[in-house]
Image (cartoon, rainbow, N blue to C red; front, side, top):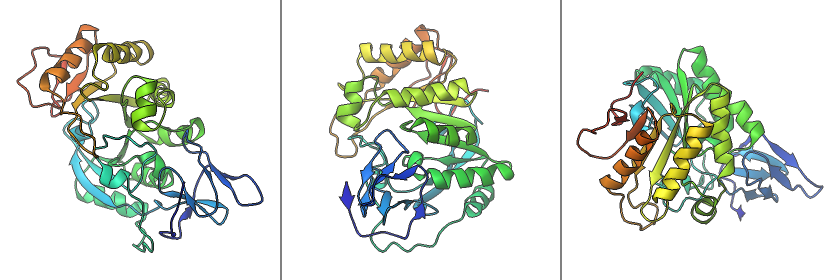
Length: 315
């Protein structure tokens, strides 16, 4: 855990418990369950023990906002053709070596950060002004700014906007039960279908991610799952087959599945994913009976009608 000068006063965070008279605080948001001495930041870089109280430095402090086609997130089967207003902060509770958003995920708020707070109503107003149909909690991992997400989501619903979560799914049960019901759609990135991959490359564990997927399915929340294919790390036929078999059994073959191509990022130096590799995975899904499969590669029109490009989408 790191000790850094406080970035901002912080807002009392959810899921913090004081463990002893020395002011040790335990964070109960994600499976890391960080145990923090006064002044320490959690592994996420944005939740801090401030004099014996867990605070969220992310609260009302977005560092990135903009409108995008919802297909970019990616959602292919939720509000196709619409735009989503994306909101992000610093921080992440995984440590994926290949992170595409490392400028946000690996950063923390600088000492003395004094930007004005942005109330949830302002985010909603911006979304409406840009003609968006939804607000997307994305770019970095939204779990770590859960307090702010829940406020915005509640305000968004009052104005008729949908809420969508783009997440790594790395969250504990109680926070999940509070956050996910506020979402109309969730896309969970399953980084690689093996515990060894998660522990060695992502700094986490696979099972909590699978639990989040199953929670969405069991509770009627629209779920799409994404598999980022990295050559020689998580793109073997065995690993993709295991992933697809699990989705088919636990989530259903009607679950939208996105296969996306990796390119070197975050200091990771594996070669870029080939179009053939992505299409091979997509074809494996259709052969198993999946009905909603998407890719993000530049490719000719797919021969199989079940495979969509991200700009397509279906009702």
